[in-house]
Image (tube, rainbow, N blue to C red):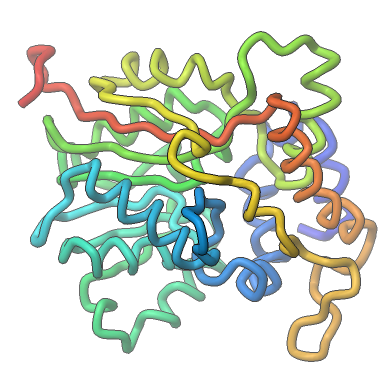
Length: 299
């Protein structure tokens, strides 16, 4: 996909939803290298304890999810929307589990494989190019599933959750963190505070946070908790000196996104997210759930 087509498709929710696979793939093809320099190997936000830096805070979130999921050594885990494998590697180290990461972006899958091919933890990692809307795995193949700020890219969240339920064993933990909008937004508030963020990050749409539990339950999960990032710590440090800058170069060359109008869209994405959160219109939320057994109770 050329940048001109990307810029046309990313401008409306309808086009982002209809063409999500190509749009998301192109977005991460363009931004992966600069995001890696800015955000490390884990492309997600975090909550911070006093004195924590970004990477330590990211590890705190990753380890919290793994602990809440009850993941242990020998488990087979699935990371839905694995990026370039940073969280998968961190959770594999923390738990001793084996982790399969799936990603719709083939470029990031290749980066993840290259990064971890010779690492010690790499023996317990594999990375697969796949779509969360059609997971290529057998029923009940995994002991646990996690997803960090990735399922917002699914065009049909309930269907994606149902796909995860299908490949997770009964009683297995499904934990995650994601981006949502506030409940009850007017069309004007949504257009002002949420749509600019979705355009900037190539997100089809986000769920109202209050609907998360209902969607998970409908997909086959028993929900143990939902919470916001700021229930766990300070989120303000996420905005301190981060986000791609218009003049930023990678390896001495202009970044791939610094062309054809994409630069201004990307440069405005992090401020749009920050402003939406500060105004209470965008929510960073997380959940802990378990796959229900076929008879409706926990296995």
